[in-house]
Image (cartoon, rainbow, N blue to C red; front, side):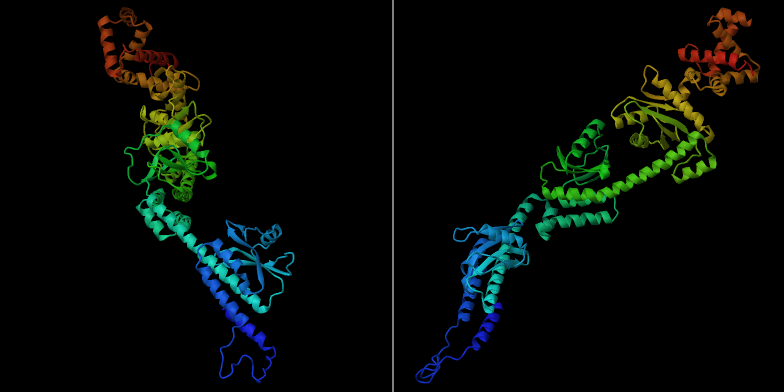
Length: 593
């Protein structure tokens, strides 16, 4: 089109000239004598013919450098031009192409780069006219052609030059497209050999250069759906063909999609888990640890979980890493939301427990407990947990909560300066909670104190003191780690600060209550007999004499004491608690009544 336009302009320009003179016969020289002659080829015709031939050569050349060389060598087809320099765009830079083994002058190269993709004048010594013309295609700037002339080109010559530049740029576009297609074909072939069947299907549909966009859109759709972490592992497994899994920060499995899931899932080692988290956190991006490719879900620096691919054959490449990173980004809002919910729930639990420990009205407590899904109408135990190597912060509170849930304890929880407090609706197992916390923390250096049963919300503050007392007794005993129940302390319940008359009564009632009731109903003196027996150091004769009864009568009474109370006078622990109880009964509580 440009050539035709130039041809037309050329003829219009030529028609303004005078007709050639007649020859001696009175005819124009261009008219053959004796009949019409073929018109002679004009300069414009010659230029168009050269341009067509050059265009054919340009589009038949697959190499960008050769295309630029042909254009520079045949620039004279467009007019009185000379090609001073040629440049190809490579990786964002303009690389000069030698002409006759000579590189362009530095001043010319500097000027071309200053144009920043635009056409512009170029100054070359000895050349009154010079232009740097951009070679542009659909993909953007392919390079530059720097053209000079010893005279100012006519309008037709400029159009011919424009046509040559456009043909050269179009040929470069075709060559670039062919090269990219060859490169894409090679890359696609490599990926098909490495990828699993699902990845082959995906990559056959989308070009390799759009893979990142496809993964991003896919994971963004999963995140927008608001689905759980199972949806993320399903999507990640589908994209990579590798088993995908989510663990919490403590190494416990939350979701697994793909084959070869371990059953049962290995119990995490807290020390090794922390070492792994620190190792991954120090790196940028996913990290390979043994047969897994691991990335952390870590908004604002806090680790909420672990996303991993099981890659036993070491097949993961940059596309697998890309998919893993996008999956982690889509999973982050879900885990953050769950964490926020857990924090709100923990705060509500904490506020309720704090009020229960301080004393609160029952109506308000019942209403608030229903709001958090907990039943306060049942009897309760207060449990105090302290671990020597852990500060009682939110992290440790969550650890205690998780361990309690794992052993089936329904509870409310709060934390104090050095311990965590639970209000549980059932008596804890003697060892289960302690063992679960030992696994969670990686150490057994912890102590748990459990109160007696509380039947009233108003008694919870008092039972909190019982749990603290049980914990304190255990911490100062020879075997200071483990679980201690207040109602199993015996004599230790009335030792130490904070004990009052009611506690003494409770202790006496526990150890002597059945005997006291028996004496009251039968007008007997079993408690007094037991007290005298201990006062006489267990001597039968002295005891019988002090009571003014026969030895056989004493033996009968002691046997009745064993039968009614259920305690064994030969057992050291029972004997000690019974003796203390009789002393308290006689001295502190005033004896019978």
